[in-house]
Structures are given as structure tokens and as C-alpha cells.
Amino acid sequence: MLAFVRGQRALADQAEVRLLEAAVQWAVIHPAEWPEDSERYRLRSGGEAPVGLAGPGAPLVAEFSVAEFGAAVGMTPEAGKYYLGHALELRYRLPRLWEQVLTGTVQAWRARRVADATIGRQLSMQAAAFVDAHVAAVAGRIRVSQLDRLVDEAVARHMPETAEQERRDAEDRRCFDIHTDQPSFNGTAQVTGELDLIDAFDLEDAIREGAEELADLGCTESLDVRRSMAAGSLGRRQPTLDFESETTGDEVSTGSTTGDACAAPPPTRNRKPKQKMVLMVALTDAALRGEAGHTVGRCESTRTPVTVETIREWCGNPDAQVVVKPMINLADHVHVDAYEVPDRIREHIALRDQHCVFPWCTRPARSCDCDHVRSWTPDGTGGPTCTCEIAPLCRSHHRLKTHAAWSYTTIEPGTYLWTSPHGYQFLRDHTGTVDVTPATAGRRRTPPRP
Image (cartoon, rainbow, N blue to C red; front, side):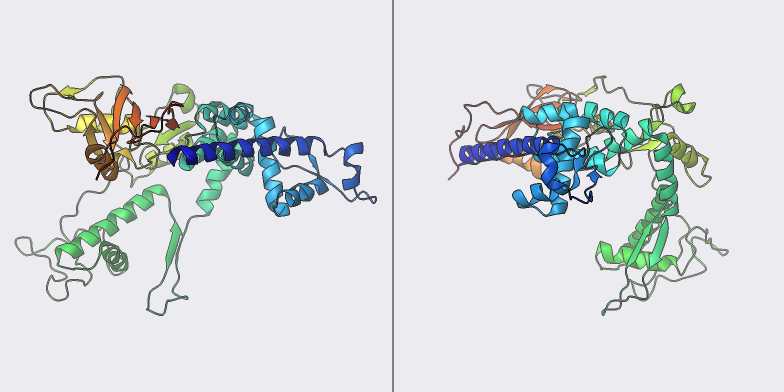
């Protein structure tokens, strides 16, 4: 059955590639210049206009031919317009990715997702070429979030004026709305907003602390409910003041811990340290000087690229805590003679692998278990506890590896070859997952469980 569904998937992928090729050809034979073979799509009054369906550098198309194409393939005119636009974007502005589609290396729907992103951001030819060069080899594995970050970086590097305008527009979009004019039947109200990242960290810190205080006081509500209650309590107290007792001991002169455990918590004397926003940024002298193409850093907390100007603003914020950490050399080999994985190895593999290394899993590595690829044994005959033998696995995939017939080996640090119970194989590295199953695979390697 698995062999059958894989075969049907391959046939469907091939048909989708042929349809994309036909879409490009349809646009080619119906250009905006209205040659003889597209005459029937032009109104005699000259009402047909050329339309640009893709970015700069792609040919314009005769307007009325778009609806004809959409109707022929069962799409609305708008859907047909998008499909033709994706085909032209791939053919003329993302040539490396287009070649991957034609050879069957990348599925058409994945390539169309990239084309949609480059069209939507109106990338210049240089920015589109940057995306094409970086995404072509991994388009079959790249995640939506990674693609969005890559497009952001292309804009920052090759369209600095646009990047600066988008940054200013984002500042203008900041808001915080409490919809008290639209309460629910149960007496609740929705809250929406968009904050500066540092302000968002401070607000999260205050709400997290308030929810923990409620739990310490005996409140049995769920975490989400306690967080909402903590947000409300912010409006009834000033959380940044240090309410110290003027009497003796650790007594607090305001508030009480008696009564309803789920009441708003009183201000506390000793506040827990704020959550730090970790910025791991590699900047060159050229970036500090603001030279074109060298104006991008990366924030690990959000896993997104940020401009040098944004970094300057964060560092200049008097309320921000800036911590400078030495960069970790991911080529170093760290080894310990124990089963427990120390923090320095955890940090190393989190930075190296970024996510759970099970095929197609996207769970962040920092929330995963540290798994010994080869089982550790006290006598040293198993796998050692070192950076080349430890990999991040989320809890569900850790259980699959431990209790099911899934197995994997380390090809090199950060690159893993997985084998499923039925013998299918998948190569996983920092770029994502690729199916490398041999053509002869598909039979169960292990007997079925009773």
C-alpha cells in the first residue's frame, strides 16, 4: 500500500509540472503585444490591457487570455491569474528553482509557494536572484517560516529603501486594543495588539510572573486563565515599584495573602529576574558602516533576520538588558564521560540543528530532548556523550526512536540518515528533509508486531 501511494504521489507531481509548463507556454503565445495568434482575445475597441502577473523581468500577458486559461482548468479568473503568475515567476525570475521543478527534484506546489512569496513582496530582480540562489537546492525542504525569513533578508540586503520603509510602517502599526465595546455573553473581552519586541518581552515577563504568583497563592485555574487574570491585575497595580516593608522582616505593607487564592496577587518585594532577549548577531565592519548588502543580523529569540538599524535601537533602549556572549564554534568537538548532557553540549546542538531532527519535524531544538544517537552504556561500548553523537528529538519522536522500529545514524554532525520500519530512508540536515529511499525499498524490514 505504501508503495502504491508513493507511486500515485509521483504521478500527481509529474502532472503538476506539465501543467506549469503549459501555463508558461500559454502566457508566451498570448503576450501583451497582441500578435496574430492572440487576436481573438483583444476587443476591437482596444479595451484589452497588458497585465503583469509576476515580478519585474517576467513578460506581460494579454489580459483576456487569463480568464480563458482559468476556465479551462476549472479555476476562477483570480485563481488562474495567480497560477499563471507563479509559472512566469518561476520560469523568468527563479530559473534555478524552475530547473529543480522540471527535473522533479522539487514538487510544483512547493516551488509555487516560493514564487508566491517573491511576487507578494514585489522583489527586485537582484532580490529575487538572491532568494533563487539560496532556496533552489533546498526548496523541497524549506519551511514557510524559513522562506519568509529568507525573503525578509533579500529585501534588507538588496532593497534597503523598501526595508527601511517597512520598518517605519511596522512602527506605525504598533497598537494595543482592548475591545470592551464588544464583550462576549460570558462577560469577557478580546485583547489585540502589536508591540515593539522589547516591550513584548517585558509584558510577557510581567504576565508570566503574575500567573506564577497566583499559582503560589493556591489558585487552581489553568495557566491560560491565570495569565489573563495577571494581565488584568497589571491595570490595578504598578508592577515595577519595589514595595518594601517599612516594618520588620519580609512583611509587605500593602495587600494580603489571605482570602480568595485567585484574587489579584499583591505586589511582591523580590521580583524574579526578567527573561532576557538573546541576540546572537554576527556583524562585520561593513555592516556597522551600513554598506549595501551587509545590513542584516539575526535574533535567536525570534529566529528572524533584523536590520542593523533595529539592533542599534535595541541597544540604545535604556530599558533593555544587552548581554554580549562569545560565539560558539560549531566545528569544535565537546565530549564528557557521563550519561547526562551538560549545558554546553545542549547549547551547541541547539545552535547547530535548530529543530528536532526527525524527518520534517519543525519543533525548536531548545524544547527537545537530547538523544544519544547510539545508546550510551557505562562500559563505554555504546555511543559517547559528545556533540557528534547527541541530537535533539522532540518527546514524541524520541519515543518513536526508542520504542518503535525507527532508527537513524549520524552521517556527519548535523546530518542524519533515518530509516523507517518499512525501509524508507530520509536524509535530514539543517536545510530540512529529503527522501533518499532506494527504488528497491518498500518491503517491511522487520516482522509485524502482533
